[in-house]
Image 1 (cartoon, rainbow, N blue to C red):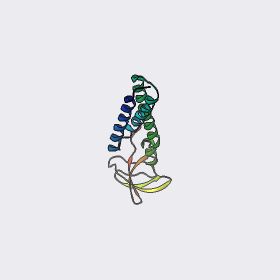
Image 2 (cartoon, rainbow, N blue to C red):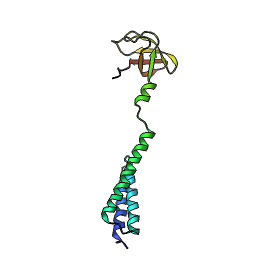
Image 3 (tube, helix red, strand yellow):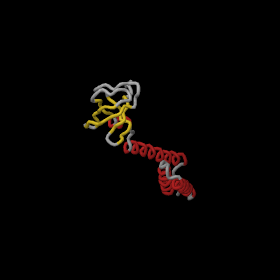
Image 4 (cartoon, rainbow, N blue to C red):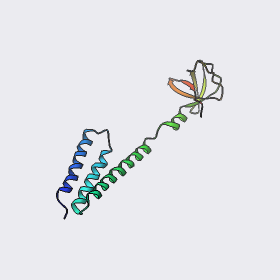
Amino acid sequence: MPPLWTPLIWLLVAGVLLIVELVQPSFDGLMFAVMGGLVVSVLTALLPLQVWIQIILFSLITLLGTLWLSRWSAQRNPRPGRRRLKDDTAEVLATIEPGGEGRVRWHGQSWAASSLDVETPLLAGDRVLVISREGTRLRVLPTPPTP
């Protein structure tokens, strides 16, 4: 039978980490360390595990859980990058003078637009970036050149 203090130490580690997690709720990574401490505590109460195996098992549970949480979070909340750029682009229908007004096609509909660029004219067919919407008027800029 393993010594009684080993599972209690792991239980204490899990409890301290749980308290830290509850005090700092913005960091969810400690929850897997809490679960790792509880799993190692139960295993050391049932089996005579060497200390290095306990530490590796605790580290493995914490690391794999945190990596899983990171991947799950990234899939659930994708970066706005390309998708947002596609949603925020419009096509110029008629030439818009620098700082002037004209029409663009955005989400399949014709919109009144004001160019925020006071140097570059926007030619018909150009892609523009929709910066904001004020009622039925869009404020647009030319799209940055693609590398």
